[in-house]
Image 1 (cartoon, rainbow, N blue to C red):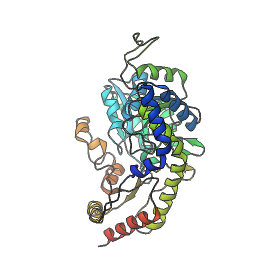
Image 2 (tube, helix red, strand yellow):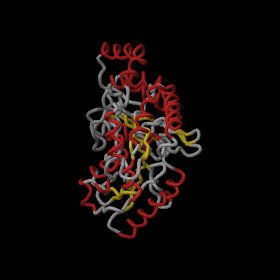
Image 3 (cartoon, rainbow, N blue to C red):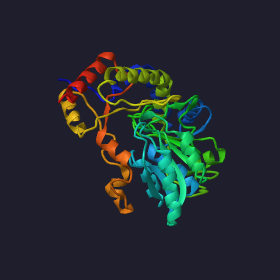
Image 4 (tube, one colour):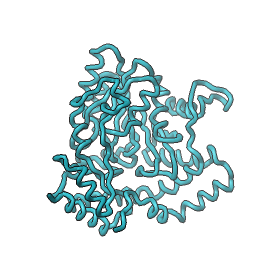
Length: 377
């Protein structure tokens, strides 16, 4: 039996080839492979898409998270609050700056940061006195923006800036406000599997603060000042190459239609599976980019169900098998089972199904039938 692709990048390529290939050919002909005109064109297009933020491209999504922390001066003694249920990059960037990640539990329904637990964790850090609360890094997990009204209320009580990790959420929205606008800065990734992905690594930072945007542009090129050999600050090497910018320009043109297709695919999954498993919930007024379609399979059956799906040629992924506070790299911080119970439970129950803009009804029916069969017994 043939195995379905988890994310069908080949079908996407065929859909955009007519626009993509001339763009790539133009870059090759110009030989402007670093900071060519397509990079600025992409930044302007990204700014327009998000509704007027300044967009600063960079080499990857991890750097996009690092650059604001670098600009803000995060370092030893600083506490950076982030969710326990996400990829390690969200916390890793704090550690690489010498700061200390503090792990916050998540809402068991939306999978995003629990604002009430955030408030508790900030209070605990302040009372402990060993660390200084510095900032909050949220995550728009699986494409759904976090509850920024509640999170901002908790962060504002302690005057903490928010860094929005929109690596999975780019294209999502709350009301008419798109992801990339919900913090003092926001970061996204253009890794190929993301809703808007390139054909390699890439990332961008978004902000409405002109002075921060200026600092980010300097920091991404070794802290450049008036010219490339004047260094106003200690920075890093994090430029988006021109070929990837050309890829993203073609993909961004197709992105609105792809987002609409993802909505249809998510609705179809809910229709096919709603009476069999716990399907994702999108709160009223929220719009998910549907980076992943993740169901919950309780009762210790998730891994067995995944194995049965594999036998039927249906790929699935476990995002994430272990919460961050229990990762070996972070055990020295003193995390223990029970610190983030919702995150720990999701790590045992969450299973992501094939999801991309080119899913057809026949494929979704095949996935749903296989999942229903796998759940039997």
